[in-house]
Length: 153
Image (cartoon, rainbow, N blue to C red; front, side, top):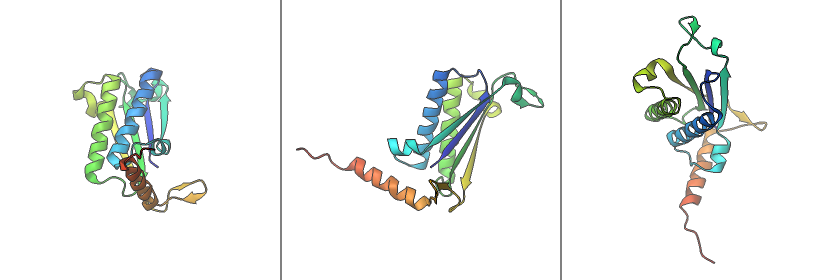
């Protein structure tokens, strides 16, 4: 049940580029979590896009001249190891740089990825607390179903 918050100045991306970026960020996150890239797991990976008015995105107390991006990824505690967080940050940064046409040498100043974990027992959905182990079991079941041979009639 990860969440992605993507923030950048309004007018930076076209609608098509925004959709492509959110789709790619979802793919990168599911891959880093080692979750199956299925319709179910995509449906519980929510993205919130925050296009702020250009003058509301600032650096050094002044509106930015070149667009900057902040990605905040929220996952259940234990979903990402240190190695997987590196994979997520690298993949998300690369996707943003490619879609927003940001030169690699400017990425450090223009693309930041923040990883936040929610403590076990602190994530709720549909009126109930969601345990990470239940998500792991659902992922394992989805992988088994994907790997199962298709029987012929």
